[in-house]
Amino acid sequence: MIFADLNSLADYAGIAPKAVELMAKRLPELTAAMPNGKEVLIEDKLFILIQRYATHPAEESKVEIHRNFADLQMLVAGNETIGFSPVEELEILTPYDEKGDYALYRADWQKSTSLAMKPGNFAIFLPEEGHIPGCGDGSSVVKAVVKIHKSLLVK
Image (tube, rainbow, N blue to C red; front, side, top):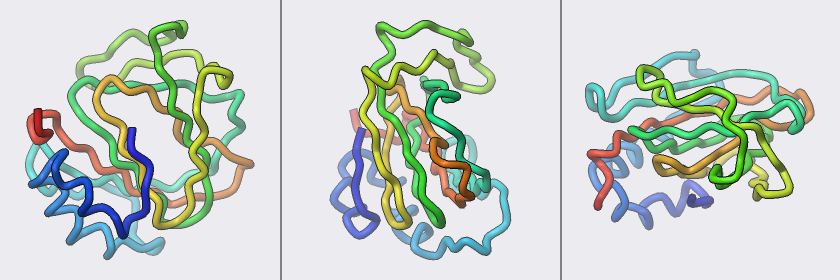
């Protein structure tokens, strides 16, 4: 997991060089006025999802993991807490769904680290890293989630 400011995105180019190059050009252009949706940068390998939602209480949250994609989550507007949580000791709620590339676990905030997200922050969760998005006080957020296929990650 990486938690940083958008101004330091280039510092992480070694993780996924082509993805960071394309994202560095695109992410600064994202605004709260953008419509929800998906923008494909590399077919089946790299895309941006624009999402709008109201945050929810942490106790209603679930831990999610992905096996094929890393997530770069960047808040465009609003405030949100995202948890980072190892899943080895957590109860599985939804077994891995290959088509959706996710599994869900019961969140245990005693075993999690909280990231206070604000506009301009980003967090990167690599495949298999548990994360708990969308936590907060019910306020509205606009978020860009960049999905990076594991084949674009440096081994």
